[in-house]
Every structure is written in structure tokens, then in C-alpha cells.
Image (cartoon, rainbow, N blue to C red; front, side, top):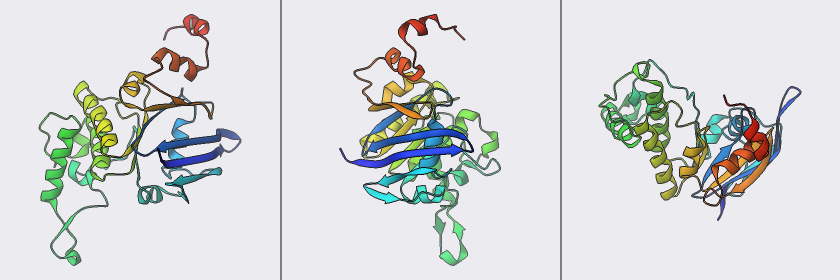
Length: 257
């Protein structure tokens, strides 16, 4: 299977602190990769490098075998990479529909007048919200400020769905979501793969990861410690041991929080 994205020997320093050390990471075409690790493992830093949010200190990124420079989120989007953070930036004063199309609004009539096609935006927004599992009849003209945390997350996911990116990075996509919304997100991820897209799925809820991913990569202290775990052949307990670096006996004796 062809690599859609390949990151080679990525290192990242924040001052004297090394967040990533010589990390190589790949995502194949039509593959869902679960990126796991404890707090501080380097997951968010790796994703920020790939999405253009922070520059890498060293290392290379390849898209379909071609070396690319990703220095900004605009560069990432131009290379078909869309990122949904758990605190995805939405403009709270604007409507759901406006946030879905922010900066990429469809126009109606002569382009010189720059008139937005609100009817199209509202219709697309309503359809997308249903697809991500929002069953309440929320008008697409509703401002983001009036939505719950889970509903805001669903809007961010809907935006990536509509623009049909080659690689969709989901950072804690099920965080703060209800049962129906979570089901919608997991169904979306499966559907993205089935239609030829790739996803990176990051979540603390390892049960959600096991439901949708094809392969699991584990980071610990800024390094890759496992990169080819098959969720069909491994158990959640086994993966948790890899994440923590603890033995079965140590894990059994650890305090429960």
C-alpha cells in the first residue's frame, strides 16, 4: 500500500526541551492510523508539525513520495491535510454555516460583487450536522456561541468532511461528545477510509481507537516505541502496557485514580 504521508527523522526542540526525537511516521492511502501515547508523549507536537502549526527543528515530510515544505497551516491545507484539534478554533460570533465555510465561502452572482451563497451554505451545513450525529434540529444560522462543547466539535469535524481532504487529522474528536455524536464521528472516520481518504485518529479513549483504526502507532517521551500494532491481533491491555512502558505486575500495582 502506497504511503500518502511520510515523516522521516522528525525532531523538535522547545528551547532545551526535546519534544520529538528522530520520529519516523507514515500514513498509507485509505488507512486510519491511531496515534497513541500518554500525556507528554509528543503526539500533539507531531501533529502540529504535520499540520504546519509549528516548524520542525529537523527532519523531512513527504506527500505521495514528494518532499514538501509545510511551514504554515495554509501549506498543509494546500497539500490536502486538514486538522481538527480538540479546541478547534471556531468564530463564536458567526453562524454554524459561516464557520463551516470560513475563508472558502461559495459565491453567487458576478464574482466582482463577492456575494456569499447563504442558501447553499445553510443547506450543506444542515446535511453535514446530521451526518456527524447531531439529531437536534439546530438551524445552521445558529451562532457557535450558543452550542455545547460537543456540538462545536461536531461542527469542526463537519468542516473537514465537506472539504474532502486527503488526510484528516482528528485530535480527541470524541472528547465531550454524547453517544449519538460519538457514533457519528466514528461512522465518519470509517466512511472516510471507505471513500479513499486517510485519517490520523488521536484519542485518550482507547476503546474508540480500537473500533475504527487499521494500525496503531505509540509514542513515548518523544520517540516511536511501536508503529505497526494491529488492533485485530492485539488487546487493549497489551497496548496500554506499551503506552505506559509498565509490566503487567507494575500496572496491577499502580494506584487507581
